[in-house]
Image (cartoon, rainbow, N blue to C red; front, side, top):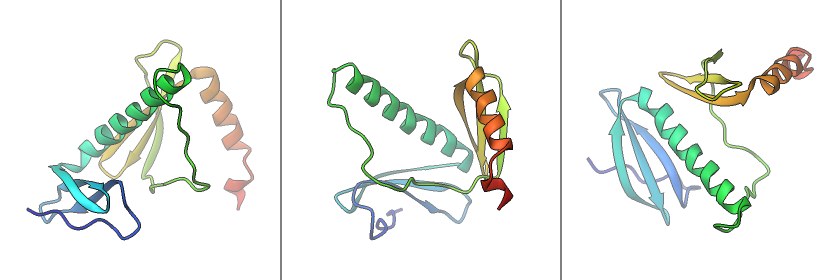
Length: 132
């Protein structure tokens, strides 16, 4: 299967195409063209996201320590997805909990210190944004 061309506004990055059997084709764009692709079941999307974000974390840590050049996001807006579930779960890191985000069939856990998670919960409960 030849993957579809990337969206017009995507030069380098990752995009997806839903297949008739319900699987998702993850396509890597390079210089405005499809460079590589892999087809996986939708629940594997969480693993793809976690690995991509893990790489971004490693690159940031390497930049902070001077091993690689430090980069930062240059956009004023953040990419987003619509979530279908949000919860809290156990975390393998001591004194941390996972903020678990579900997007369709995929789940990804974000490790947060328990104290920060409590702070986040309190600010979320008192947020004016939720009242709008």
